[in-house]
Length: 256
Ligand SMILES: C[S@@+](CC[C@H](N)C(=O)[O-])C[C@H]1O[C@@H](n2cnc3c(N)ncnc32)[C@H](O)[C@@H]1O
Image (tube, rainbow, N blue to C red; front, side, top):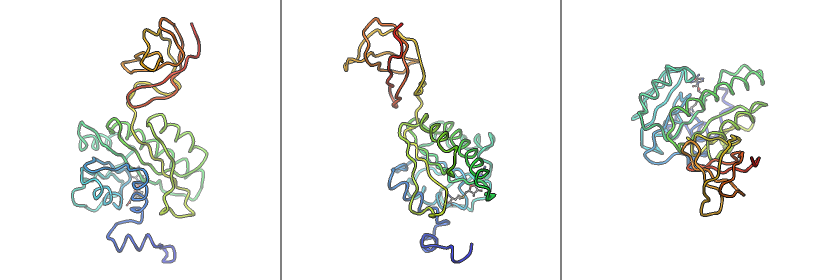
């Protein structure tokens, strides 16, 4: 890197013994969104050279696993896997290390090789983050958190909608430590949803009882769902409009 592009975060990382200036991005994200807590099991996808791993270990003190195409030089108390995060074989290795309880947090700062062609780089970034989301869905505990870097472009909205479909709380955020000319933006998804329902799903149901709030209270695939403006005995078509970790809300779209 040319000397004139080295900024204060670069020198601060060097001074503090961190492997990358990217460490400050994770610190800033965590300060704002509190994704990493003490004792957490954390998986870092695209982790080399290991700055995020150092911070993740410091913040959680728990099990930390880093995955990268490149070899990651050892860090005390951190497991590393050399492999392609988009490959099933690598995901199997991660699952073996994480164990049956799953991970509390999946973080992904992976970046494709940049070609300089904006739309190609954006498309490659979307492929990579889609794989990261797929991996997170396989390894996260219910209510776990997800942080992922995306390069902005026209497919950004489609991707953030996919994250919204799987997490209760979703925000896009650019930490101060991101370079001002960078197109990168981080998506933070909190509270991984394992409910069998998704916003927009439709069902035909019969209301058998009301909950204490007066809404219809039904169970769909074992999941409690509250339906507005219904009476006991009504047969209705409903649409799910919000999914929380332990229950969902729906509106009537047709009285049958
Ligand atoms: C910006 S660096 C990550 C920096 C890291 N957060 C840190 O603080 O040191 C992006 C990394 O993503 C990795 N990467 C890109 N595609 C990958 C893939 N398919 N599987 C695993 N790692 C990948 C690259 O090898 C590179 O090391």
